[in-house]
Amino acid sequence: MIAVDYSSSTSFNEDAFEQGIIDHLQTSLGYEHLYGPDVARSSDAFDDAFLPDVIGPALESINPTLNRRAIDASITRLKEIEGSDLIAKNSIFMDMLQNGVETSWFDGKEEHTDIVRLVDYDNPEKNCFHVVNQWTYIECGTNKRPDVIVFVNGLPLVLFELKSPARADADSEDAYQQIQNYKRQIPSLFVYNAFCVTSDMLHTKVGTITANESRFVEWKSVDGSYEATQYADWKTPLDGMFPKERLIDILKNFILFSEDAKILAGYHQYFAVNKALESVHEAIGGDGKGGVFWHTQGSGKSLSMVFLAHLLEEKLDSPTIVVITDRNDLDSQLFA
Image 1 (cartoon, rainbow, N blue to C red):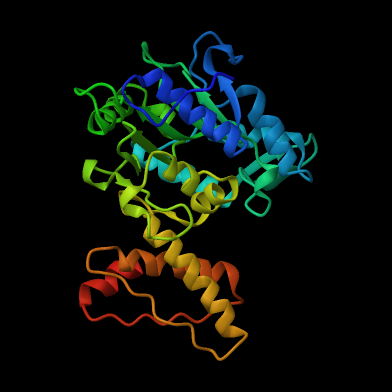
Image 2: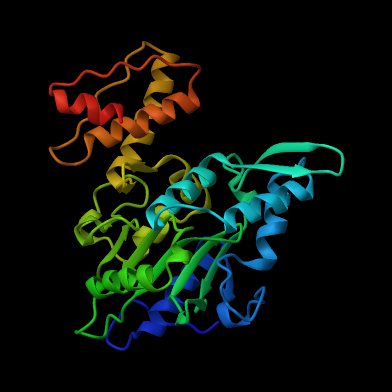
């Protein structure tokens, strides 16, 4: 591996930046790197969104008690997701990603129904994590090659669009616009997208396929400490979001749909909700006092409540959750 000084942007072009992202995910976080043009595809059409040689074995590994026919049926369902538009299809996929794929298959004598898990959320290390660059995808005659894609169990969950920090005429705003172009030109790839990352090295932002540019925001903390948020660099969101256990947690518990808007928790929500959950566990075994969860105006209090309520239901035995609001519109908003 060639040593590159990533601290200086004077001679740091887009290719070097791409390699810097790959190196960090590979060497620091344990992802396996694949170079897109070297990956065997299922056909010369280059229209398979999944890693063909990964998805089947990965799903077999995390669903060891299921028949291979159930695995194959789940992959077929993934390839044939139906919906009125990209957002509807992505919503269906996210439900499958978080809760499993319900499949039916016939063994020659009778019909079986199984739930195939796409991710092992209890054992993050049992999942397959790949960082792939220059992955060609062709749809309706349009040939595109996104910079970097993170695949989990062969599924293209996170797309990176990078711009050279050495070019004054290209920045993270251009990266955002490029993602919008991709959504129009190769929408089928985004059916399986959890979230996207844009970066020009100076500003690295994350957002979903429904987010406008202002909703692509920086992830400024690695561990919930806020002392260094003013100086967060491009490695901060990698170390803050992409450790295997952390990424799995975000996929399962911190992405949701509210009507047609797909919402990814901000770093302050992620760390605060997990700290609140930890405090609740301590309170149950102690004096019963959990503490106060303080937010500023406009920082997503309602969504933090939803994320926390979800985790309380997941982690506690049938908890009773009481919500008190001071505005009527919050009643319907939080209920939805």
